[in-house]
Image 1 (cartoon, rainbow, N blue to C red):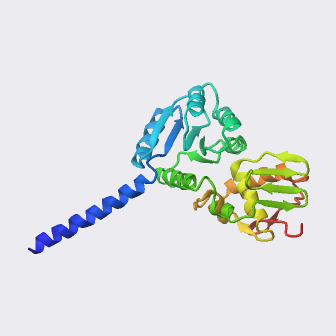
Image 2: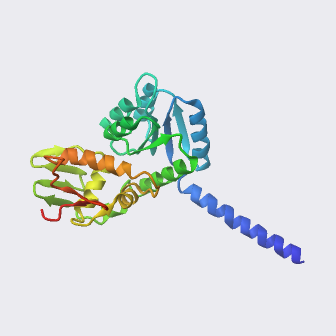
Image 3: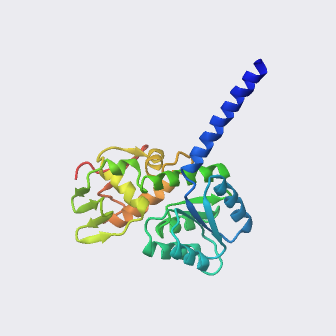
Length: 263
């Protein structure tokens, strides 16, 4: 009798356990992912883990086919290698962004290609992973992107911010995702825009790089704060008249960054 009770309890436990797994998987099982990567082993590895998450995966091994796939289909995430035969990953990213500013692009780069990371973000990639990367980190980042997709691609702080922010010639229109400086429109990547909104919504408040990484990217990984630095540097290059003496985005030494509270 006792064994029978234990069996029933165990059976109920596993029913609940697997129901929880299925529910978690069900929330992302409609996500469509495009992998553009010429390394077959990496494709197979990512394909296995993405399908374990319940994703529908398409994969191509060159830039031309990647562009065609991105043009003819809607994806919830594009995983893009920089070093591709024919059309480079940089050019693929640039061309995708000409017509699609919303689909998240996660770029894969080699360890020694620091300049490629900066250029990849400049062409419109949302983030990058450096090869070799851990599958644990890859999955964590993919899940963050999927959660953002469910929230229409916007971090929580964007929903709590007034629709238009103005400071001394700088205007940020959240509804149109548009930034103007004087009479000129400023073209920002999605993450540059979100960084600017967060800082400008809280003038005088200093944010550490780790805190910005968590709020804007949704990540909490040690050692990736340089992603924030790269975005801040490019953002300053687009809105500051003199990046050596910034007017809008200031450095709080020993902490991070803040928006000028005296404007």
